[in-house]
Length: 536
Image (tube, rainbow, N blue to C red; front, top):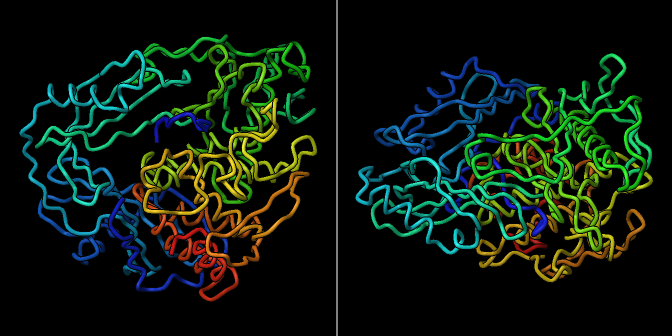
């Protein structure tokens, strides 16, 4: 997604994973992910030969995106849908084909063929006015609209509508830049919904939270810089406590990426905030560990899947207690210095980079239940990065952000029983779709914890964990590795932009079936863990 709100404030219709046809056994072996354009036309032709699966309608067309090929030749082809030339928001889908090219099923949230009048009766000017007057927009300071509203079909809702998408910028309450997409009904002028698109949250590095760590650096002459040649040449810079302008946030114009961080030797930082390079060392270390985790565990070559690195910026703003992903780079605040330190801990780095992975796979919309799943995905993989790094200074646990929580060392969220933070949901309800995504993520976090670790009390990473179930059941976990592989395959192959919790249950069951077989302990535990958080 582009950016999505500060991580630390940190669809509708039934999933048509028409996998009436079962997933191939070959998918249980190692997968090969690639952006293959060959046979793309075949995938579209195959889809169009099944009108019901394609939700066929006049004026509909498809654009092929990423293709994932399993070891047995099974292909999963992501597509974007247009309708009479208009973008269909929430109309994306994944076409599943066997090695022979025959259709196995389609993952999508669009319930039926589109039938929408594409003539707007509300003009752009009124759409802008309504967007700026919306409740969400009114919470943004220095609010400004840039560019003309775009006419789209909004299919993230039960009854797709013609809508104006109005983009605005400004600052959220905690100082995080805002890039807000507001959808205004193009026939009634009513605000349909809003989506916040800013997502919050070698040499030797003497880090704040991870001790002395080996970090990749680049040497030029006698100078070392924090450019990581091992992980796509990602560059870490110092923002000098400056913030982004409105033009930068909305249009990417006039942006500053701060100054390069250099050293006359290969040592960066001194382990404390007295050296500005210390937080930068944490950011480099976190980015490298996150890259290695996705590469070595899931076979993904960087955030974007193409081997290119993503920049990181440290020392953003003053007393900024947050971090965010903006679609291109990670940005970290310094905290307030009393209750919170710089937000550059391992799980935060993993969290922010995982927003980028989500953006370039399922593209989960950052609102409603899909927004909760987006945040849960970042919490899940941020936590898995912490375990993967196996750093004794920051041992793995299921607390989010505990390292920079100087006062309580409890972090912002926890996955074993999310409701303990006083705001998150541990159990799904009909109101989950209306809850802030940082708190509705609790349902997905709780599911993942139960799947990996099971219910009941235990100590993990030196911290007490105790996970109840919403239905009183007892769950025996399948282990972190299996749980993470199931979630990643569901994200990569089965989830689409508007996937909700019920559809995520289907997606993870399909993933478990692919990896371990239907009826396996892993498959059955996926079902039991979802039921244990009231997703049936």
